[in-house]
Image (cartoon, rainbow, N blue to C red; front, side):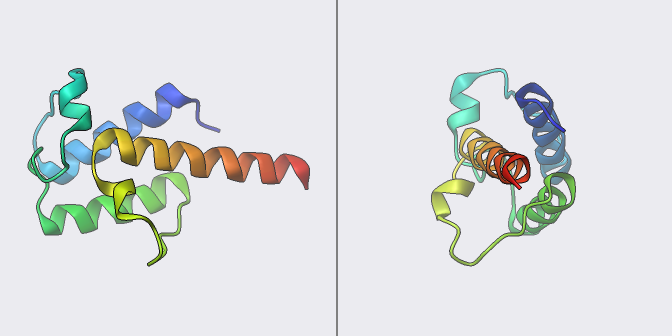
Length: 93
């Protein structure tokens, strides 16, 4: 499975691919910035969501809170929480 550093690095790569450029995600302000302010356009956003589904096994729901997509940090927290819930569920099964 993934550890938190691997998840963060993989998400960074997916986001940079969707934006089409390297991002300054070593800067806490950039990680907290709006994905749109980082250069993510609508088509890139859709590609990012599909790539995140494929990479992390997340099935997006229309009830997902919009805050989950507000920034790199928020998206990372959402993905990490999803992985932790899935791991806990698998361990309890």
